[in-house]
Length: 400
Ligand SMILES: Cc1cc2nc3c(=O)[nH]c(=O)nc-3n(C[C@H](O)[C@H](O)[C@H](O)COP(=O)(O)OP(=O)(O)OC[C@H]3O[C@@H](n4cnc5c(N)ncnc54)[C@H](O)[C@@H]3O)c2cc1C
Image (cartoon, rainbow, N blue to C red):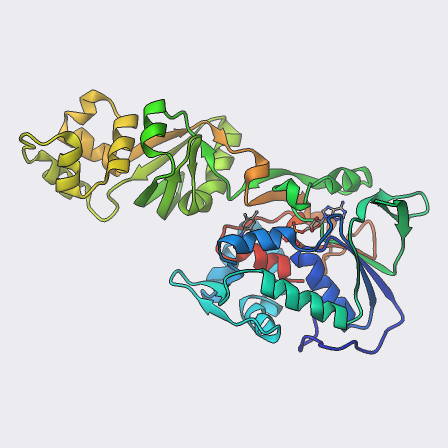
């Protein structure tokens, strides 16, 4: 990426670049390569660009995070080492400058997350496409890549039949395997595997989980938030809130712990989340308060008056604990501080905000180039990294 994002077509270098996939990763690759003088052509399977990016903007486009870079880098877990050099060159600070260069100011929300002031993705995407147009980038929509032919040309399915293309360099930016209706159907994985490129199977990331709720709990609590709460799985503990859904649990705190919970479920076929429904009180405090006689108060009133627990938390306690526990203040206090919630399975991959898995790191050199296909690069969510929500997904998709 040039120091300054170019705003007009630079001197051509006489070379061509083909970018397949017009999500954030592909569009950023187009900007960079056009800035280096390549004649850039983008190919996108859908009728328009950045559909998942636009969807991300529906609930407030969390484009990056403002925490210090060292902490930020830890969010990429095992992939940190491979992503770090890129994120140090084009990371949170550069993303904010880049947004500003497109006329989109950003602000830091109370949690440290960074959003455009407009919150939406559409003004940013519009300005970005205009810039790419100014740089001479061409975009062919409804061009769905189906692989390479015997002549090693890229083959596209279009409404007018099949077409082929070649270029000096190719960038694959085909996304992960969730929300297929937005274009990223993950079918590229078979194509690459058939070409001898190792890919790690997709797994849902930042996803909800199913719980065998009773009909009573669904009737009473579906759609209700549980907050504040801490969730523990193995050695990971997350504080925040989640939502009870008809099928189980979803929402920010669940997404934050979802990789650990998913992996436990994959390893053992079973996973349990431990909830602390009174995270601001010690076990002793909860026990003392529950030991006071409840008189004529119902259990719900008793929990509300003595601990401030709302109806949803109370319903959860009733759902998960036995009558014996409810009648024993010491056992009840322990249950409130560490309520075991059995998960049956992650929600289907297509519902996940992102996917783990993708092109294995060992197939890529330090510039994201496929070692077995020099001149072909893989960028964005299709590479085998995962990260929590918080702007980390787009940050890693935009880096290069
Ligand atoms: C509901 C939701 C909310 C989100 N919110 C946030 C958020 O606030 N912050 C954040 O950091 N992240 C968020 N994300 C995740 C983020 O949007 C993705 O990680 C990011 O879009 C990945 O960028 P990408 O360019 O790698 O892939 P994509 O955005 O998926 O783009 C890939 C492109 O490739 C095209 N394509 C795929 N296969 C083919 C083919 N065979 N031929 C031609 N074209 C093809 C697709 O149509 C698509 O346009 C959210 C995701 C969802 C679903």
